[in-house]
Image 1 (cartoon, one colour):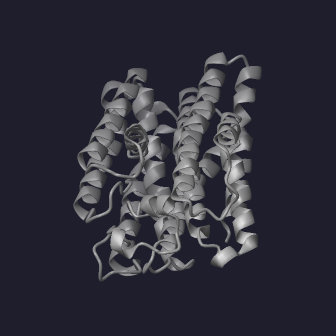
Image 2 (cartoon, helix red, strand yellow; image 1 turned 30 degrees about the horizontal axis):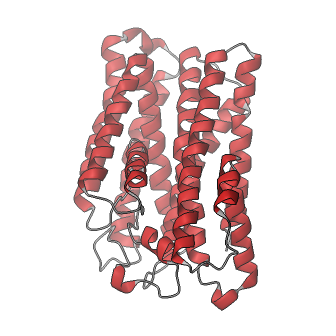
Image 3 (tube, one colour; image 1 turned 90 degrees about the horizontal axis):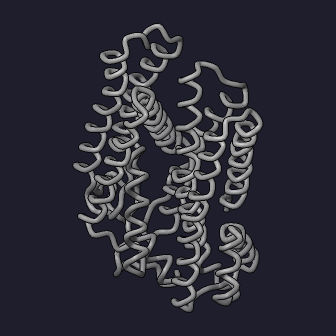
Length: 359
């Protein structure tokens, strides 16, 4: 299993990017510093809420390979923001013990990968939006900002692809994704569409800071959709609402299959409206702030948004028409229902894995 190494490297990169908050503080930019720290704290807290709930959920299933952790221990570990680290240790223990074929190894891997994805969107994406806003507003940036921006784009996309691969690996009767062309094409689709999306939203905020309310509206629409399809990802009602709100936030930036089934129509509608929104941001700047045309960044950013969005959708169509491992099935259908449950997997983890497949 390669997840633990990837997770560690990802955390290291996030730490380097987080050091930009120190740079903001030393330069007297208290607002940017406060926002960056807030994004880090909120993202970590939300991720650890899910981690704690899933620990309890799996403990109740009484099918855990790892030693049982007391509730007090779990609370302290997650309050100290070490829940994901504890999961990594448990994952390594399960991997090394090979008890009964490491029966919940795949469930632990999928949970870790999903937590990483949640943290990426809740923590790294807001930081990236902030960095881009500062760079475009002042039209200057340090080398570390440029490097962190590029790395962030790839990490956001890879966290999604990594979870997609781990989830398919964990589901019964599901073909794994080869590490060759299909993964590369899917990664390029995510990198390009997410990059275009984040840049367009940055331009929207650059046009008027109050356009942040538009992001709130998009988040509400995504959250309402998650309610409308009646997701059943979590064991408690309150946590389910929290999960739907989290999914709504992810839907601001990329399509996320919240509850299996045929998602061809929802995905098509999502990218139609997303593409129109991507075009609206530079159009608003052109119409209401014509002076922006003289900015050095405007034309390259506009071209990148248009080209990246178009090529990203081409890769999306290519993947689902030629490279998806189960082309005889409906795209994005959940592979694994209640009657297909892997008998040796923990009920809590397996229930979570059966909710959706492709992202």
